[in-house]
Amino acid sequence: MVIQSLLCGRDTSPSRWMTSFMGMGVKGGSWTQQGPRKDKDRENDKEKKSVICVEGNIASGKTTCLEFFSNTADIEVFMEPVAKWRNVRGHNPLGLMYRDACRWGLTLQTYVQLTMLNQHTRPQTSPVRLMERSIHSARYIFVENLYRSGKMPEVDYVVLSEWFDWIVRNIDVSVDLIVYLRTTPETCYQRLKMRCREEEKVIPLEYLDAIHHLYEEWLIKGGLFPVTAPVLVIEADHNMQKMLELFEHNRDRILTPENWKHGP
Image (cartoon, rainbow, N blue to C red; front, side, top):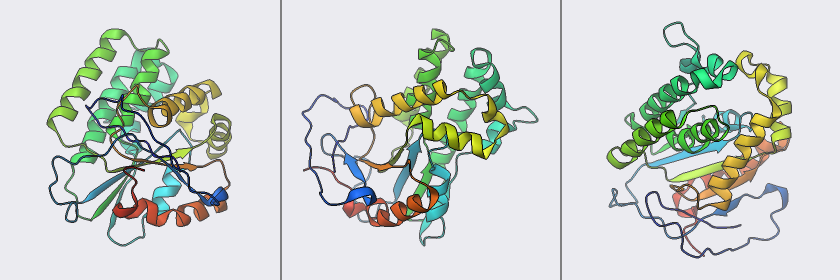
């Protein structure tokens, strides 16, 4: 396993270290971390509640992962609020964005930021909260992709960035663990076609490729954007049965804070 952690708002330049756990084969998961993680706002680690975010490309298996753990005791699961993005008082900003990102990118991402902020700040009633994506990936992946691809004007990008920066400075949207379901764009594209969601019919392979590369920049290579927690990487190109086996194999790594790696 590789350990690498980046601290939100901290210098991301310290030297990295790598450790490996051998003999795990396809059932393993790998860690990335750079530097020790500090929970400044939480003095007692034993009593604090944990927030785990499952990240990955479109059709990478995030919903399957959350559904797998949803029946586990002492866990609350927050799916991505896609239904809200499809219907805002009768309007479908998600569908509009996929059809004309230049026109509707800011509209969708403003609402995504609002709804994800709501997910992060809702009172936590269980020891573990498992979330599908986060406000961090909304900014570092999807807003960033719109801007880099030329579909978001710089003024829109700056406004969303300023708003996001204010949120992370003033509101607790911290994350304790990121589970990265790492898939190839080609696998995601095939899964996307099979599930036939109306808004996704217009998504090209090139879009999935761009999202994949941003996730790799953020969670694997590091340095471009801060990573707010240790990252557990699970290779997720496998079929459904194999993925369920992987989730079970990694259950303790995902749900037990003592197993989250913070150093060599």
